[in-house]
Length: 516
Ligand code: FAD
Ligand code: 2HG
Ligand code: ZN
Image 1 (cartoon, protein in one colour):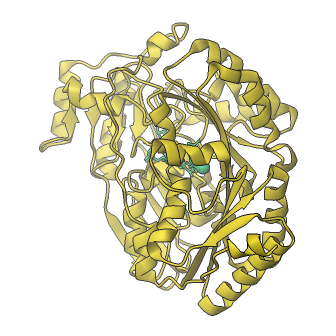
Image 2 (cartoon, rainbow, N blue to C red):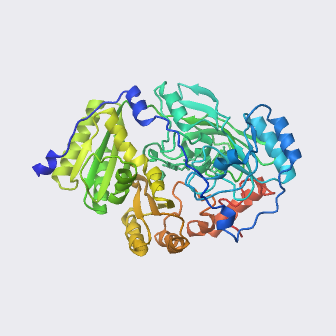
Image 3 (cartoon, protein in one colour):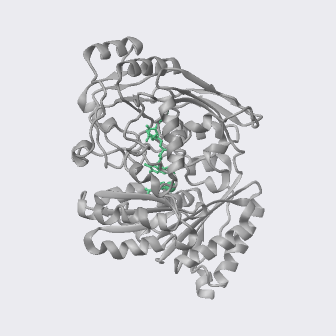
């Protein structure tokens, strides 16, 4: 035992707010490489037909220039548009010839009114970090970007309610509220680029959903503009408000298909004063589950994240991003984060827990971060997987909810099915939320590999009553498979709502809802 236990470096730490900010809340901006190799979506999906929308004319552009005066607000230069036409994961590329950058809700309203009257299709875009092709045009939709809608409007310190425009970058908001000892209720690897409006539109989950719950609970108020330009004001900041239907919820997770979110009021929890991160090696996925069960039992009130990576995922960091692993190689790794208010108490609890897990043989090796840089390093191994996978070439990305008992069977089954046709098959994600990130890579897009993955994977997930999209949404790429996870009656209600709010279908067409 003692060999194994000796390799556990337990050094509890106390992170003050400043440390914590430096470690977890740095705002890394993503730099995307050349988009030239990305095939146009309309070419890759030749059966998809452009809707019967108008095309942008010179007089439309002149009108938009009058609504959005000043430099850099109406973009028509094709080379500048290229990055906005292409998604982060380089799977989808549209051919929009016009990007608009409103600053205010009124700007958005005026733009949409014209688009609706002219029957011009639009795609709302935040930080363009979405992973399902929802944020870029499929054909030539007008891109409406929230890049210039980045004002923090107010912070009510007493209630912890932050009110801001939709284009504020998540990491910037977190830095801002940290000055008041508050934290944003969500955190994700794309925090340096993604906008809060994009987070709401995708109902993003992220690394702390286990602790703070989904955005459906944290958003107290929301403002959105409907396709006809009408401004829907649901900007209440009350915790409790049961006056009829909760209209704001409709926009959370609607992926830009119902309207453009322009403002939000978000409830920010108290920032934890003590944060510890453990990185553990285990021998099997059933051990990951054992550790999860024990973690909940022993660390319940201070647990803030429970993530796992398989050994191939860790290699993405070590091979592609040249990062080092803090522990020796194992089939699976678990990342546990605790966040509390009493450092000594949390440290003691975590130390005792890990000692117990090591002696019982459930954990083979582990380390607890003692310094800021080490905590950052451990989180990077997890948060930068999506970035590292891109180094392999093309990435087939899946984000599913599954019952934990069948969680990893999917990865093993697919690995066998795909054999040596692919570079890598990886499984990782938010075990604590029952959310598996399953990714496959090849040097370039391969339709044979795609044919082996889809629809097989969706049938697999449906068999176990999982969800084909746990947190990334349906966007362009998954919408046709919606019936694998949603009943016909529920989709019918969705379509009825879409018809009422967007009768001309100009809002983000070809996304979320399936074709009839
Ligand atoms: P975009 O990508 O610009 O848009 C996403 C969708 O929202 C599109 O359909 C778009 O039309 C719509 N939209 C954007 N802004 C608005 C608006 N103001 N009004 C209406 N519709 C709008 N997701 C998770 O859930 N959890 C994670 O842990 C996670 N980690 C990620 C890590 C990395 C490295 C990356 C690249 C992505 C990750 N994502 C994750 C994906 C995730 O969906 C986004 O990062 C984020 O929520 C999207 O925000 P965005 O501003 O980039 O939106
Ligand atoms: C994460 O949790 C993101 O890191 C991205 O949701 C997942 O790239 C992925 O598959
Ligand atoms: Zn995720």
